[in-house]
Length: 177
Image 1 (cartoon, rainbow, N blue to C red):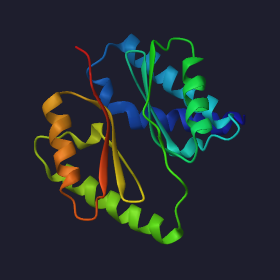
Image 2 (cartoon, rainbow, N blue to C red):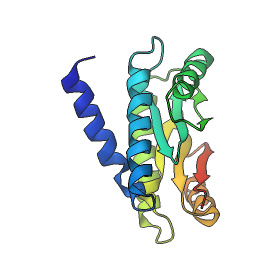
Image 3 (tube, rainbow, N blue to C red):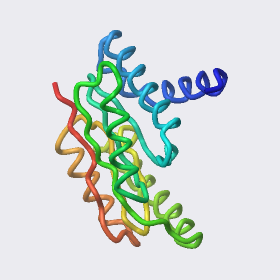
């Protein structure tokens, strides 16, 4: 892999993961960041895995895979890549298998994703920065490590209340203390 691309990917992953760092020790931050980077790099090299469609988050060695893939083989391969990374304690493979969608549906999904993200940002009791929002065919997946069961439940209720949402998948996990 091109070193410049790898460095850019690592910087991007570090920036995206920064809000979760506040609750972990420096060692946890370095280890989790390294694990996330290694999983993402592994996914980039895995044939048949649409790595751009797979969200990877790590909290205290637990890797969460979320998003949508087009077949079970891609889901399974993603989980295998994550399990093969040194330091991974557990993999929570929450990828959803969903067929490809038309361009019109993709545009509708993008608009719906924006509506859900906006609704989550407007809620005072939800830390929207901890939640990934992915949409395929009107199905919304909320993923990430959140700070409480109450916040998870509230985010689910908000997403279900957005006009145009056909269903909501919960791929959020409450951070262990």
